[in-house]
Image 1 (tube, rainbow, N blue to C red):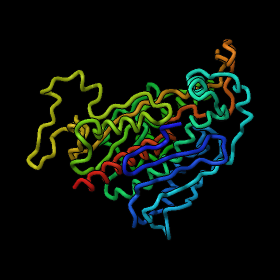
Image 2: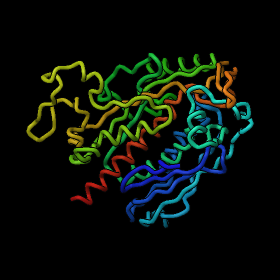
Image 3: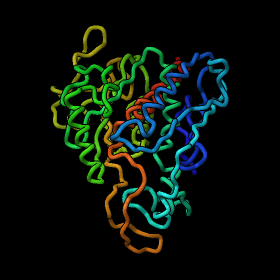
Length: 353
């Protein structure tokens, strides 16, 4: 299986399956001499882990990271950083009913047709459990980036949208509620909607907005390695993501050039920021902001038709512990992938300069 490594200079390779002994990763390219706050890394994992509230999956995993190499007395050595996160609360029997059945909108069918074999327990390698390894690497990348701030938050759940622009939000309030929306009134509506959907045995989608502040001018390359192109790839590699837009996004397609152009100030900053902090694929020093769309989780606790390995249409019902809305737990994943992209371009820029 190819495609398990992300990055050019700051590289992450992940391994493991949802119901295997452990998941983990190897980070290559992290500079030496970086003093790590290990508690901050675990904190990011705790934000992603299952069982943290009533509106997420109730699978109970401590998600404790164990570092195997590349760190000595809390400082990176420049050698590969290896780590594992043990799986401790698997209930593989919850998936015995789909051993020979392909669930709608899952990777079951395509996975088996491509590889000829699949681990049906929780989706195996295609499970979102793999993203815990990304969070570890992203937490290290965040510490490497020093003054650069990365803030993600829930901006919509179904038809409930946070209408305020990010400039009017207090990012310190993101963790003040279980849906991770920095506006209490909107958060209450989102939480109520997710609970309602959960009672129906159904799921619902939503969006995450991410803001990256204090990015220096010059990150990104102007042709194939545009900064926004790599951010898009990073976000679209996350399970359940169906869309990515940065800056004015699709709304910009409705505007005239005279409305959309970001006029300059004398210091090189711009009066508006419809470009989303990136022009010509290169950061311009303004805030980078983008939005990521997540589909409803495919596993629903309702009966629906599915295809079995013999070509029959059969009735099945989802079992096990699943998120009614994946968005709240995806916040640290979005931040982690953003950090990996920025770290990679930051290292590349330092080499070129």
